[in-house]
Amino acid sequence: MKLIHSLTIASIILGSGLIIFGFVQNGYWPAALGLAILGGFWVYMFQRKWWLSPVALFVLVGGGVTGIILGETILWTLLGTMALLLAWDLNRFYKRINVQEIRNPAKIVKQHLRILGMINGFSLLFIGMYYTIRLQLSFTVIFFLAVVSVWSLAKTVQYLLQKPDIDQLP
Image (tube, rainbow, N blue to C red; front, side):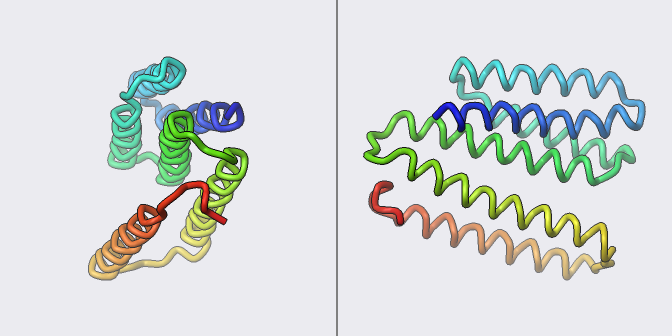
């Protein structure tokens, strides 16, 4: 459990730092300072086991999107958002695994980290492809891809929720 705890804090700091770096790079110091305080507060909330982490995630990602609107490079927001989503997932997993009685927690942690690694690896691959290929897609194609992504995510969550016992996972 110490590994999950440490990875969560590292992901919060990394994600916040990447988004903050984009603001600092463009000279938006007051916004960067506000987001840095919020990132620090998220770490504090995680240490105290408070429930407000989704709010911090929403505000930090919203800050990143605002940075894109202000002309910030999209790369820092994508990477920061990916790290913040990782932190949020690890935070939820940490809370869930500490509440449930699990026979083999090391196995569950290893499997969860493997799944997160694959998801983040594919995300990095797609971000790299975006910056390498520079595809120009129409709004219709982007909308279709977004709908397919949301549908796929919903099916994945539905499949994961059908697992009767967390100890029965391979």
